Image 1 (cartoon, rainbow, N blue to C red):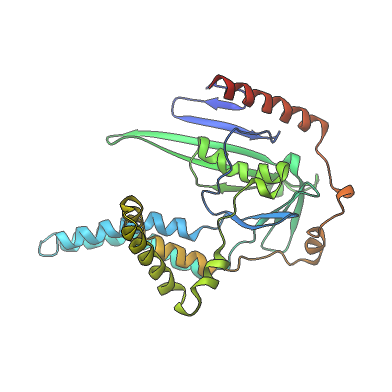
Image 2 (cartoon, rainbow, N blue to C red):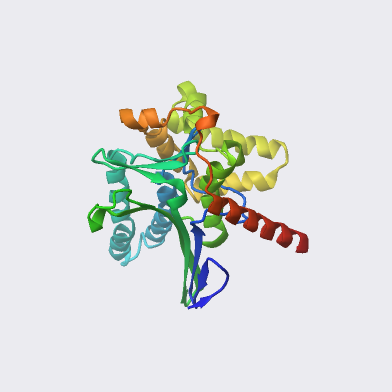
Length: 317
């Protein structure tokens, strides 16, 4: 592999961007591309890696393709084979989806900007309190070449080190992986966490207001209310002669299964799970400004240098 830029390693079919530490600006705008922000306030940010809606939107087109194949072969001798292939392609993923719907939603990782620490909870009730400046972040992009051309997939991996130096090897590290694509998309998602901790809650978006969506649906119910909202939005766009937006909503409904994905997201994440351990509840309370933790001198210098680099790049562009 050859080095592309500081913090980046590029190969023939892969690229790894090391984003932290130090947690310096990436130059990308914060974008919550996977609806990972579950709670945001002046003290802490809850980030969840549970995204049942994304799973549905990936599976939905495959289900439509299989139904189309079955319809085409309905009067053919190949029907049984087509049905068998379809069950193989979508049967196991559907079972995984149904199983996940019966399981509790994993607890979020909590970023406390006033203490500059991160709480990493576990199923067995344990939790780690990790210094923010020790959190690692890496964007990984991998490409493959086939008969249909080149395809690229990527991850954002955020890692945490066990604060207990005597922990066994298997319990020394924990990571969250987000299938958001590599490169700039992963950087934009990481910027949600980095910008919150370094700039504040107003620096990042908060579009995952599932509790608000459920409240607005009211008596219409989650399922029919979401479908009704999509169809009325299409009607409103058509009446306003906004045909592009209407077409996109139509595609979202029938080709991506967005209403079903949103319904399941609301069902499982409205409200999202909370951290209820008494020690963490106390840790999550606001502190007087004079008690807020401050950046280390090393990070302060690194951020200033990076901001100067970005300013120069913007002037050249």
